[in-house]
Length: 229
View (cartoon, rainbow, N blue to C red):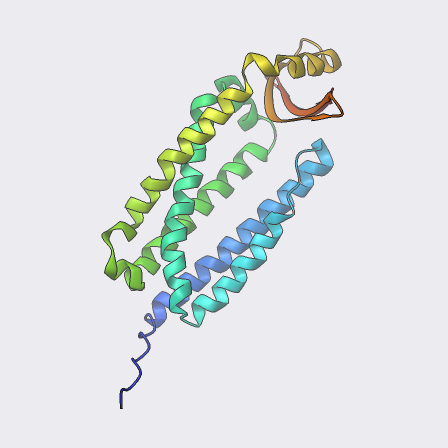
């Protein structure tokens, strides 16, 4: 009579505690980011995502499963954490290389939003790196494939994300979006520089309808304005 295979051993208790604590912190940072989005939506009319708070609570559920030592959860974190860290860093590289320095400087100078956003970004990447390190040491995948190495997964995510996000940001500033910039300029005047943040256009009954979010900025102020046509 064949005996069933023994379940894989639980990771050491110290590793369980570290991974669980880092997931709880990551969920809290995600919910804090959601709160910032709500404040920005109330103050400036920025985009509001309902997925962000849901993600925060989901991370806490994953933290509970990780504390129970579920091997499938540890394997998933070992892959997803470095991929997510690479995506965040890739987006940062793309934004830094494609955004005018004057806008980056204005973003850092206008109130607390620049430093708070930067600190939130930094904490998120650090937590993802710690999760990737700890789960890699005790995951089944790490023992089976060299491609599950955190550095390899991070690079595999960083490079295409940077290329894709950078390309999209550059396309948004093309000549085809200039009419939206002019609509924003008609409302706020020539005292600002303008940059397209998002663009949506569709055709209904033979007529074209569009909406764009435009960032207006100068040395002392950043504003977000919605234009439609």
